Image (cartoon, rainbow, N blue to C red; front, side, top):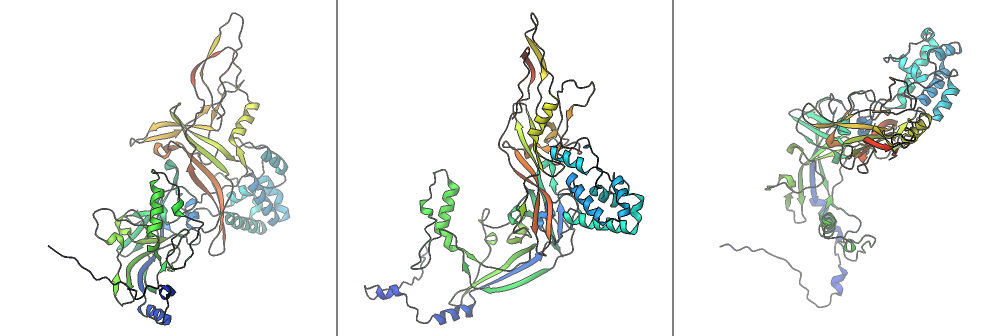
Length: 553
C-alpha cells in the first residue's frame, strides 16, 4: 500500500473585500524583470548545417545552386523559343551585326512564309509569319547554330568576321539570360505526373538526406519533404555549427485565442464556441478543442538560420524564478509504446527526428496564365483513359483552345457523309466506330514488365472526306506535356485517380536574394474534375442518311 501526497500553496484572503486584490499591485516590478534577466528563463542549444547536394528522380546528384530558389532548381526545363521569340532575337541580332552581313544571316536563317508541318494553327501566327518572312533573321535558329545544337542550320561564312562574331557572342549571352534552364537531369517524373527529387548534406560519418517524392509543383516548403536513410552526395562536405541562445519564451497567439491576462478584451471576430460542426466533422471538432483548451500552452522561439539549412535542437533548458533548471526533451525522445504525438516534424527515417528544414523557397512570385493545359481523365465506358489537350501554346506564345482548333479543322476537312437512303434500298448502315475530337489523346491500359498497370499514349484516326488512299490520318499529341517525340509515353495507372488530374505548363518569375530576376518554365499538377465520356463507340447501326452523333465533351 502506498500513499501519494503533495504540497499545495493557495492564497488566502484576510478580508471579504476584493477591491485591493483586484488592483494586482506590483511592489517592485524592476526586481521581477531583473530576476528574469538573471536566471535567463530558458537556454536553447541547436546545431545547423547546410544542404549541399541535389538529386532529381532517376538522375545524378549535383551541387545545389544557392543563386536560385529551390522551386526553380526543381521545376525549370529547357526552353525553345517559337516564332515570336525568334523574331525578337532576330531584331536583337540584326541591331548588333555589321550592315554588310545582315543579308547573309537573313538567307542562312530565313523565316519560312509557310508554317512547318505539325505547327499549331493560329491565325495570329500566320499573319506574323507573313509579315516577317524575308524581312528579319530567325534569331533562335542563329543561337542554336552558334552553340552547335544538333540539327541547326550552319552559320554563314561571314559569321567569322570580328563584328559578326562579337554580335553572336552577345546574342548568346542575352538569350541565356532570358530564362534559367537546367544543367542537370530533369526532376519531372512523367510516369507519376509530378516532380521527384532529394536534397542532402554529407558530414563525416553523419549524412542526412531529405526527399520530396511527389511534389505537384507550385509552392514548396518543408512539409513536402520526408527523411531518407541514405546519402545522395553531389555537393561539397558540409560543416556543422553549434549555437547557444538565452531567451525569454514568447507565447504563440492566433485569432480567436482565449485571453490569458486580466482585463484582456478578446477578439470577437473569431469565436470558436459558435463554430457549427456536425457530429461527423471530427477534424473541425478536434481543431476547435485544441485551440480553446491547449492554445495557451505553446511558445515560440525566434532563431536566425541560413536559407537551405537544417537545424536540430540538441538541448532545451528552462530555469524558473526559483533557480531550478529543467531540461525539456523532444517528444520523440520520450519513452512511448506507439508513435509519439508531434507537430512540425519531418516524417520518414528516425535519424531525422527533431530536425527543422528551412528551405530556400520563394516568398513572392508571379505566375503567367497557362501556356499549355492537359486534363487526364478516366473513361470507364471505354475502359481507357484520355489526355485532353485543352490549351496549347501557339507559335506566338499565346494559348490556343484545343476544342476550337478541332472545330476549325472540322470545317476545313469535314468527315465523310453517311450513305443516303434510296427507295427500296437498305434502311440502316453499319460503321465500325466513331471518332473523338483531335485534342483527345487515348491512354490505353497495358501491363509493364514488372507487372504494374500503366496507361500508354495511343493514337486515334481522323475521318476526312476525300482523303487519299494510304494517307496518314492518325492524330498525334501536339503539346510539350505529352511529349510527342517520346515513345512510348507511359503513365502509372495509380497516378490517375478517379477524379483525374490537371497538368498545366506556365512561366514563373521572381526576384531572388541577390536582386537578380529569374524566369523559368514550370509545370503544376492539380486534381481533375472527375471521370468523363469521350463518346467513343464501336459497331454501330445507324439509319440511312444519319451519321453518328459528334460528341463535344
